[in-house]
Image 1 (cartoon, rainbow, N blue to C red):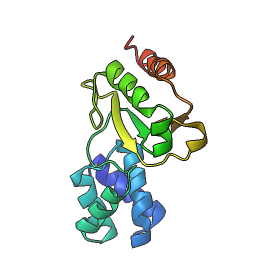
Image 2: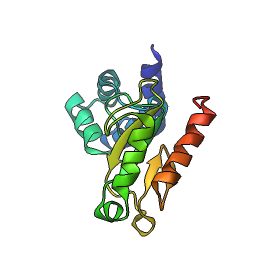
Image 3: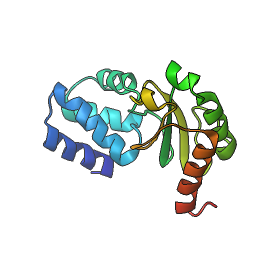
Image 4: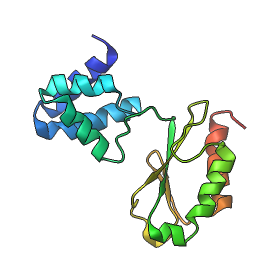
Length: 158
């Protein structure tokens, strides 16, 4: 049994093999693998005994369940009007300039992926971004550069 099959079996043992168990199983795979491969979605369908199309439909419905490979650090920038009015565009330019990637892309070293997300729930401290599970608010281009520099330093990139 390969590691994905083993992971999915363990998650199904923990959460159950019912339709209601699908989301926690999907989240568990993403937590460990950073995304849901076609293979993992088929294996989940097999383990839970539901159609693969239902697994795929659920996975693609939720914005935090990625279905393509991502970097180690997933940067999610809030795309609400509040963030846009408070400087999101300048913040995005700073990220893109520093990492040399565009929205939806991953750096060649697979360290960073840049994505947009619907409201992150921090409108009162806009603009906001999330790097994996860490929230950053009241951002400016300078703050963004400092934050990203910190992530790059801890990985020996600077």
